[in-house]
Amino acid sequence: MSVRLLLGKTAGYVLNAAMLVFSLSCIYPIVWIMYSSLKSKDEFMLDSVSLPGRLQFGNYYKAFVEGEMSQYFISSTLNSAVTVIAVVVLSFCMAYALSRFRFRGRSFIYIFFIAGMLIPVYGLIVPLFLQFKQLGLYDKFYTLILPYIAIRLPLPIFLLESYIRTIPKDLDEAAYMDGASTFYTMTRILFPLCSPVISTVIILVFLDTWNEFPFSLVLVTNEAFKTLPVGLTNFYGQYTTDYTTLMAAMVLSILPVMLVYLIFYKNIIQGMTAGAVKG
Image 1 (spheres, one colour):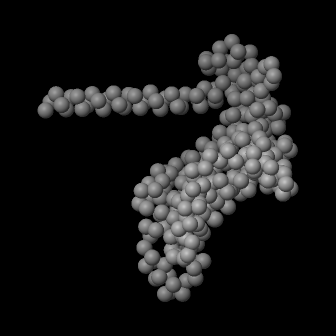
Image 2: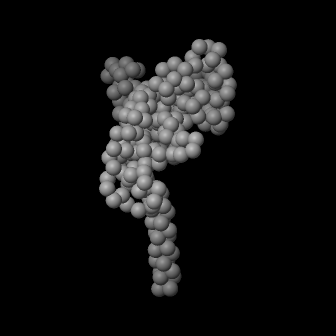
């Protein structure tokens, strides 16, 4: 028994050590980018791993102002905010209808949306480009918002529909008996109860939208409508790259993602478990 216990503890230590090494390997690149963004260009070229000798905050000014990251930041913020709000509202309404009502074609509609999770979305870039050109939707301030919303609807609908089905219908009936309308029941009763999975939807949709690159590269050409991932490519030259300014721009681009994650991280696992396992 003692040998078995010793082997069990040893296996636990080895597993924890392996997970620690894996975690550090994921964290270190972010830390490296952050302190490298504070180095001078010559200092970085001499030794890219060492800590900065003197902090160069001018790299951030150069990235944000001279590199015109401010306009890309505004474009990404607008696209992400509108997409998150639209996806949350549309997916919640659709999930409520699919989970609470039985009507002809319900199964087809549900399968239609879920099938969207199986489609390689970037294979749709060329058809979307041709359609947007023909319909006059190409290179507008709202061009990216349309595919962002459509592409990100299936998973939130799946999570919310699964979660709402776990909420007893007696709650709805009690609200109706008290004179509550369907809209009131949805917004004041069910919506707050769905806060864990809604938090998960918010952060997943925000991360996907904020980091999206191919659609922004293909569907818009106006610099004012391009997003941060595309804006980062401006720091790459044909013969040279300003790495320290590029890393300062990368830090600016990941700060909103880290902020959103810190706000909603407590509900992420809870929401994924509630939406995917309970259902």
